Length: 161
Image (cartoon, rainbow, N blue to C red; front, side, top):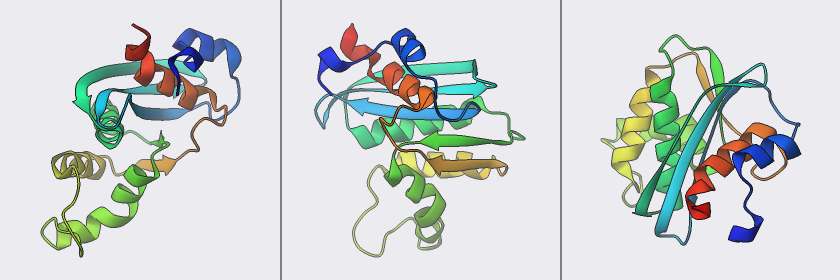
C-alpha cells in the first residue's frame, strides 16, 4: 500500500466501526518482499482494547511478519483463554489449521520441498497447541473490519515514522 494511503491507528478507529467486536486481530506487513517489515496484534473485548503490541524487523518478509504477529498474540494469552484469533493471512491459518499436523507427523517435512520459515511455524504450532480453546480464523483483509484494519495500521506504522 502506498505510504500516502496508510492510516494511523487513531484514524482507523474514527473511520471504521464494522466487524467483530471481540477476539485477537493480528497482521504483518512488509515494504518490499523482502524488505523492512512490521507486525502487530490487538486483543479486543466488547469493542475495547485489552492489549496491543507491535514490532519491526529491518530485513524480513511478509510471511515472517504474519507469523511473528500470531506468535506474539498467542504469547500474550493465558493458556485457558477462550476466544478467536483473527488473521488475514490464509497461509498462516491453513498452516496451523490444516497442514502442521501432517508436517509434524512426517518429522517437519512437506511431501514436496522444505517448509518455509520452519522455526516460526514450529513456535506458532507449539503455542497454538498450548491454547486448546483458542480458534484461529481467517478474516478478509482491507474489507473495513475495524480491528483488522487497526492491526494493519499498527503493523504498518513503522512506514510513517
